[in-house]
Image 1 (cartoon, rainbow, N blue to C red):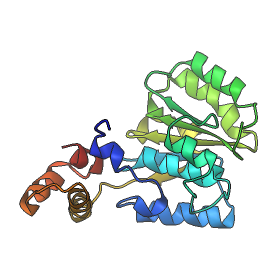
Image 2 (image 1 turned 90 degrees about the vertical axis):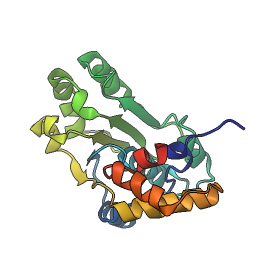
Image 3 (image 1 turned 45 degrees about the vertical axis):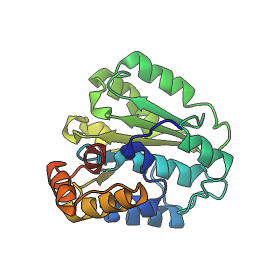
Length: 220
């Protein structure tokens, strides 16, 4: 079996596994339970604190066969395809390499088509601040009047670079740096499960050096 780095192997798969972002988890779960969903979300915060993982979990919560639900089953076709990164209804886009107006125009054309399997067609755009001003402007109309089956989730480490007209159309969530003790607790869980012998002082050093990024701590 090929080796999988811990940051991927221990990536959260449901809301309960998200570390250090209780304020966001509580709000998203409440929105799902009350069926009061925004059509566009902005996940802002430092690297490695769970923005993209939360976006994928939200996508599962929306497209699970039991969804919208706060507890995706992890067993239906939609959940499995999202976990494996091959869902046709969840489109992940890297804003750094798809930042031009032509890419956004193509997105606007594809938005019109209904989801293949799930209830929603979900666009996750990572590092959305990298889009050009022209690309942002081309996206505005779609954000203002999206089809009812479309959800946008934008992730960024630099929200101040996202133009105000886009920000005003999103529900914004600010992710925090993860406290040292919560990082240590997760590292202890990992080393116990992986049968690794590590002194607690080492885990403390890793947690402190990660600057609040659980992904960085797990990678090191």
